[in-house]
Length: 322
Image (tube, rainbow, N blue to C red; front, side, top):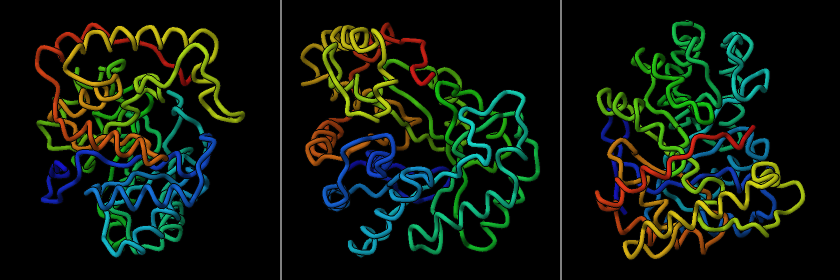
């Protein structure tokens, strides 16, 4: 397992992290606690020490599972959470106010809820689950995190940047109070590499790369005939002709990777870790087979410079979350 320093610290985080949305059972159908805990323990045994959760993942269920497994493993992990906006609006409307989404008391209260779920005294990294860079100079969020850190409830602060809006947090990063940005980054959405990555490298802010497989299409798991369980959010994400479109694009990427990788999933994961700005990548891994596949792919390291250059042509500007 490869490790990278977190932000300006000496804390070593596994390059392959664990995205814990799916194990919360919210919007992802089919997760079973027994299997989720088994996969979590195997991830820890394999050297993964970064686990990303959020209060809204199963209304705290994901956090509870992480807390339980950490205690059972007897090993201290680096666990994150996210504060949901009080108005529950994703993404933050351009004209919204910080006091509508993240008033000071809300930030503190939601953090304390997460701590109870995890049965922990502190959260390693607490993140805003949505953001608007117009709030950068507002003192209320700063005061809240100052209080949380003073009370020993939070170690570091981060922002989970709005879907496909990687530059909508840079001004906040300039305050010097943000330790990490979590952002969508994959072969389709390459935009974080334009401005956010250079900014973070210069300012030693960690990047947590989410959605490396584009909710499954870049894992080769979505074809024109794919059917998702009732209630699964991917029914909407891949609605209409989107399944056919992503499959065709995925096959072109597979062809481009040629003999350098064994699968499109390997290509997608290794693409993300080919960028120095990325501290860790957090695919969801509800199944043991997915964990093992990701461990195998990650161990092969970055893609070649030639392939990275060729993959630039597969950049795709769109937002399927809408």
